[in-house]
Length: 261
Image (cartoon, rainbow, N blue to C red):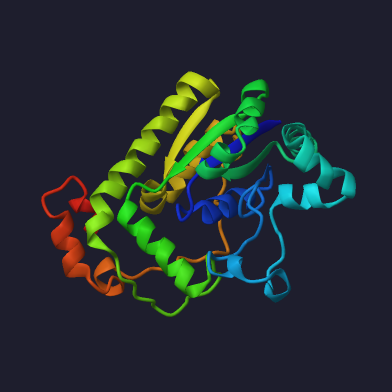
């Protein structure tokens, strides 16, 4: 059985990507938010008292560590060991498939460095899912917070957002540097089979890109893959960015000007 881990950042199409993979009968890739997030909540909801929160803890690790008093204590006194046990058990489960995979975000790898150690010690493949258009990723992130909606199976009303144009170039360069650092880590530190998948390439030629992913996962049964999720921000940036002209002016002449289109 091939075991894989998707490493990405929020609003990069991971839920759609995972649900598409999971539609293949030989792949188990459940659409968890991530392995280590505590709540599936917007930043605003996190500040509400627990008794006012409608959402429940959803991540596999949070459920695992909360399932008994022994594990709750172990999380505080011996978290690294508990995480190793959690990951080993997660991938050891027999799902009746030929490939099993889950997802973590960059921030969770930084917060739980034992995950990197566990990856290096085990037979795992890495899929690096990126969204190259960082302006569209930023807009998607802001709209998701406003709507308090990350994914949907039906179309939703258009939501407009304001983007601070003064921070864009510095933020985009920082995020591109992060992409580069992780590529280097995969090659020099993780030393595991590695495939980079770009959200934009998936949108442009889904069938060809997913064929490449299936080959990486050693699945030779190529078939149409589907997702119940729909794109929640199908409008152009000019339609959903309130100060689009300011943003356009800020990026004009820079290496990020193509992000506008």
